[in-house]
Length: 357
Image (cartoon, rainbow, N blue to C red; front, side, top):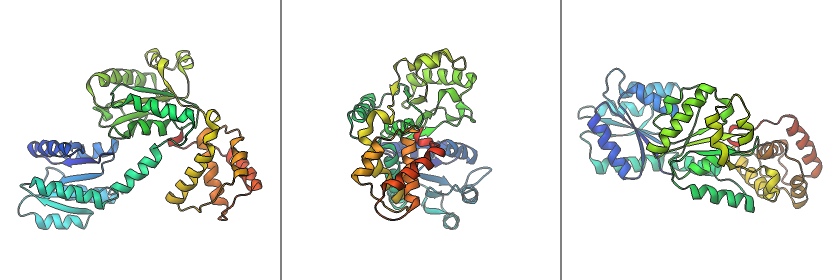
């Protein structure tokens, strides 16, 4: 996935020159003319690198950098841009988290080299690897392979996509998969105004249409109509209810309900239980890599037991089960009694995480 870069500079000529150059290099670029605009962009998207001018009105670049550091928003690399005579200030900025600086007037060769180096030496590569691990749905069953092909057939179209699937089936994982080659995906926060996300700077995922008020649904409908015509990004809107249920729901705008007539169906785990052994192995590795839980092995008897289990919470419940059983013990082999006990424990505390809804 291409890296996303935020350029913060009060000079419009420089902002848009950098935008053009970096986009020609294949990067996704957002621009902000002052600190307030930069903060707004960072609230709705997650840049992999920030190019930050030092001298700006009201809030200068170093002050903004300090604010990001104090608020815990210094997780992405920042390269300072400074005019002649401000090198000392740029060096000072490194004490607050800046990893490099470039002098104005800008040398394009130096800029591109600095950007590539900053991304290569930052967590960008690891973040992209981790994103890909989350985005890639797991399974080699015909059901999963057909769904992957359906997603690929949608290609880079900007037409809105509508998903329907049961609670815990991984609709957001599939939305991420669909967005992986299209600049990534932001997740809509129902407590924020939709206009704060417009124009779209990435695909925008709406977790469940039923969570939106009728007013928000009307705004979303109008935004989808506009985006389908004018944007290179798209909305991905999800629901646990199918078209007929949405149509009969008085709390759903009829225009939005109609959009689910041709929704992509995300299958329940019961429809592809042959993928359970692969899912078990995937989540064991995931928790071992990301949460340093011990690696444990499900033998054939354990896999068969879990293939025949009724997963009422779908893939999310299976994921919680794997985490719980890794936390139980660090012995490599897992016995059937431990599995039964852990299944009861997880069933009593089932709660799908956001990526698995």
